[in-house]
Length: 408
Image: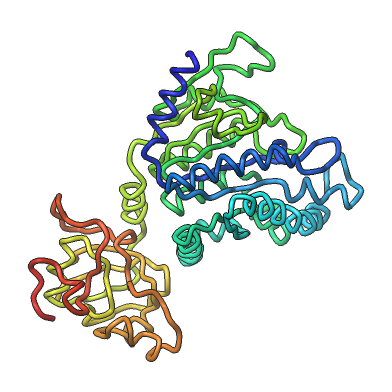
């Protein structure tokens, strides 16, 4: 393919993207010989991301590099580290890593925040909701989250082991439109191009099957813990979440601009969009751990795709906790939908029927306005095609009423 063809392919995936996750590998960010940050390269990447922000695109950065930055201060510039040495190196390097990202983004008047995640934070529903809410709050305020694995406390048994899969989980968590893996290679080949220069480059992958998995090779870079196999696993996670993913070479300056200009790459296409994929993820959950009963007005509003507020709740059954899957039923007991509750059964029962403004006075803390957000709710009954995508279920005055809502 020509540069123009690659540019056209990339534009097709990124032109409409509003939420992006960019993964930066250690080998790109850290000089392998000196252990120093590649400052000019990092500044060029920050300029790329600042350009995306000016186009109203929200970006999350998943950055490797903490261990690579910290190991030199332990006088372990080469060779494998023991687990406790990795954790010590990560503790040293995380401060430097966060400082570097803060420095380069400040040049473009962009604020940043550091988030350290472990597998439980993305795979356990309660922690998933907490981390998702934090990330969405930061993005909503124009702040760029910089995410890394929490290597300082994780054991080998509970680590991701690479930031490719972490980036895919983060993309799933924030319902990203696309995930950009900046790598030391410009995409997926039929065979390892370092061993066989005649290998075929794949510009677009529409499904991940055994043939694609067979193309994966081992890790190559000294500081990189993941090879092509982890990138394909990341692609599986991302595309199942409705997020397109691209692998491109990030070594040169301004890597995202180069990608947009027609840099060679491999795109993995998602079959659905992020909202649809999230609904499928929720729908695939186990049996609900409890039931929330709503009144007639709220049940009518449910068909319009509104979030569930406490005002529309008439009853709580079961011993569910925050983040658990619950059924939403009408007064007759008919199931209308299923969703992830932002409150425990005990707290939901206390605020049932109340306006959101009263939650803090009742519970002693200011929780979410929504008991179940529309993004975390799957309807059992089909919603009308023209229904709004993100309004509120549960009536608190005329502003929250649908066109056919009655009084509660």
